[in-house]
Length: 187
Image 1 (cartoon, rainbow, N blue to C red):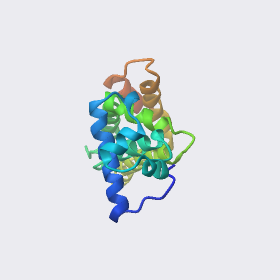
Image 2: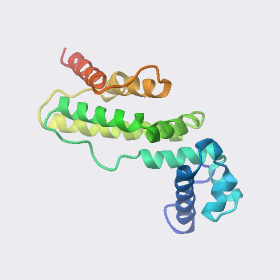
Image 3: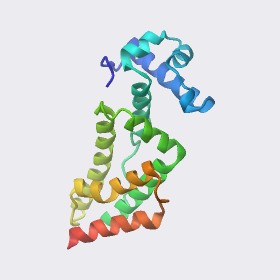
Image 4: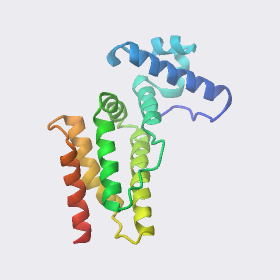
């Protein structure tokens, strides 16, 4: 967890933005394993002690940057039905998280599992997206799902296979997860 709460304005925000930008830029120039706090600090124009004081270590900083990139920018697509909304969302999630960038972001968050703030934040993003689909379904008069059950039945297998690479994820596999989860709801 960040050592110091970062305020949303002023010098603190400018420093955070500069450090995040330095991480983004350097990540495209050097291998992830070659990134160092001094390298990032130099690029951001801050002393390394600033990074250590605010983030503690490199893994915390990378997780903080990953969380910023993992925040959804829009609500899930509204396709007109709970099944199509959830399927569309699951396919997009699988595509984004299984990409090279998505895998790196997941890895950065997972590396800080002892500091649950980053993983909890990413989890909250997922729940917000799924809750939005659920709320739309309720407004349409459809049978809603339990969001936690969808996380268990759809999201968890996708993330597991991405992290452990034990199978190639396909759209058909993701569609099957959604179909199976929704069929159980409808009983």
